Image (cartoon, rainbow, N blue to C red; front, side, top):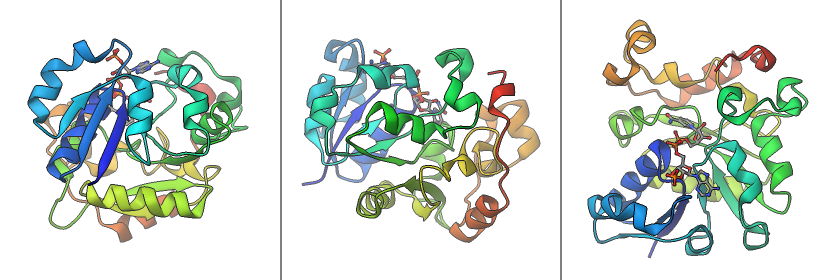
Length: 235
Ligand SMILES: NC(=O)c1ccc[n+]([C@@H]2O[C@H](COP(=O)([O-])OP(=O)(O)OC[C@H]3O[C@@H](n4cnc5c(N)ncnc54)[C@H](OP(=O)(O)O)[C@@H]3O)[C@@H](O)[C@H]2O)c1
């Protein structure tokens, strides 16, 4: 039986949960407010889903999914996560997360920074470069849509890639955590690459229906990506 524990029940956590139940995973989802706040989402997800607390979500699956703002990483149960592979969807938005010197200075990518907050884990970065709105529209698309993944541990990356594949996307190896800037916000391989119309997406992204993006095209975009000026980020 495949299982997935998801921490964060917002736009990304809920989108991944929907993919997971559709892919015959059992899902345990947690948030900051507790299981009672998840009654409606669990009812929508159906009998394969349950709500729990963060500890239960960590314990539920081999690879817990983190779909929380960066500020939450410092409050996660470090002991329970020790030695674990984590799929992290996090991005750095200074307006939400506050200014973080290591990120503004480019000393670290967001994924490297997360790894310093959870040092005894194997972080794999995925699902951070696609808007939640596009996730159900492009899951199991024909042709398949590719997502980049990055990590420093080869086995962890293989395991996370397998989960990404199960959830309906091809996984393209985008290298190490240090190299994951290639698909951070404002880079050349960020959300607009999945738009059916880049202009339409920038005007009203919720109206955009998305367009499949092949693994080969994603590799080209990653190779041509530019490192954003994070210190200048205004959102
Ligand atoms: N939205 C997108 O399109 C998108 C795309 C790519 C990447 N991302 C990134 O993915 C991450 C999640 O984004 P999102 O849009 O899903 O955020 P969101 O809609 O704001 O949801 C955040 C979730 O995190 C939970 N949370 C916050 N602090 C927590 C804690 N200490 N313990 C447990 N749960 C906690 C919240 O709990 P409550 O519900 O109880 O408040 C909420 O369920 C962020 O880093 C974001 O930058 C987002």
